[in-house]
Length: 266
Ligand SMILES: C[S@@+](CC[C@H](N)C(=O)[O-])C[C@H]1O[C@@H](n2cnc3c(N)ncnc32)[C@H](O)[C@@H]1O
Image (cartoon, rainbow, N blue to C red; front, side, top):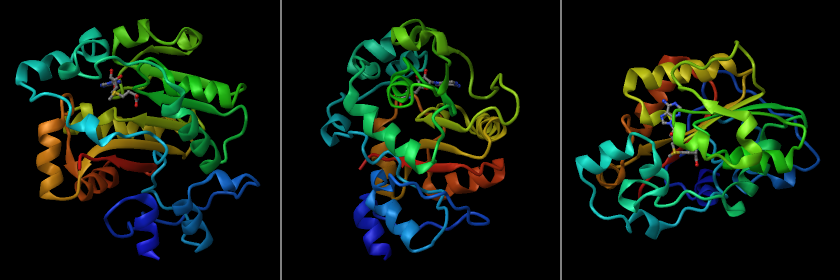
């Protein structure tokens, strides 16, 4: 079974540990949208697995990871300002053009909705939403959802997709300006590793605090020395890059009980 899970998820490590008591998600008639690996987990009655690849449909081109030139400390410090250079400047400073395309999030948000069995009017927070691309695809899929995005970048917020502007504001993941248990789902995709370790821990606590129990994050991680080396050559902005096991320890020490997946460089 673990072989099947490994094949389906494309991952190369063994079955993750279950954190605490297993939680179960209600099955919906449209469970067919769930990926094969998730269905196998559910069919085998393994309960809720916090380590779950909800980013399986997100396109990740291998060559994109090698096409960037060698980066310098100066490139990194410019990128870390999360301004125009990072989003819409040169490739060596970030995305090299951060533009909306439906292929990025359409299937991913569908998977998230179905996996978390979200009601049509779910309250969803995207921490580090940038220009609101993922939120926009949620708005198409779930027109009655109550969407909120925050991002540290004034540039990204000012240049967000027009229909998303009313729902997006500047904010810092370390201190979310929302009451406890405000959201049905909190998401943070490739955001919190941009904070130093202790601040990253605080952001996990904040995500836990403002969610009503469902959260999903993706973070830069490595599982071998080879991946570690490749990651160090690749990262521009991340301050906290950990081995997957160290991340799990950090989640536990922060009291983060949501789900997670890894952004790796292979
Ligand atoms: C790699 S981008 C990911 C953007 C988007 N989540 C996605 O997956 O396309 C990281 C984002 O995190 C934002 N960010 C970095 N530090 C942050 C912080 N402390 N609080 C909120 N957002 C932050 C950046 O401005 C940027 O938009």
